[in-house]
Image (cartoon, rainbow, N blue to C red; front, side, top):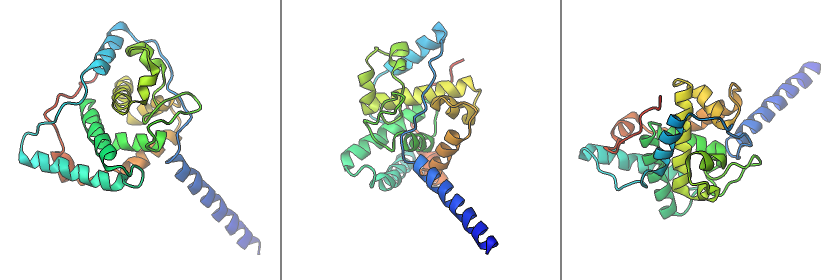
Length: 226
């Protein structure tokens, strides 16, 4: 009898852990990016990236690249439909994710996984720490590298621009260590819970390698800041 009770306790603990993990993939995390002193060179470089023009109309090197992009777009649109039912909004969002991710040298699936964990794809999400929007950007970034108007972070394209640029900045600081960079993004550097959640969510947004290899653009992508 004691063995049965012990087994039931283990099952209950496992179920609770699974529930916590599942909830972690769908809620806005309360962690916050830490405001750090930026060198003038880095601050100006980040500001230039933020102030750059909105995503242009894309041009593709070949019909195969266009087909790869359209396959990626169709796959991700189908996956996102339940969370973002409006087709026009969903397509605009995915097109912007694709552009901003490649522009910052990031994988679109990683960006989508981060958004899933950070805000659950809620455009107007606000965390208890004050982070705003889809990628839960802290308002101090608008003061450091933007125009100082934190309300603009509730704009979809602006929020994705900030989020991707900030994650690329953290990757540079961590010399390409994605685990540590994700920790910085959440203000929990060195703790595994947040990076593990993002990397787990990322897997759901991967597409086949053939599509991803062709889903590239001729648009300039930002190089790592040194």
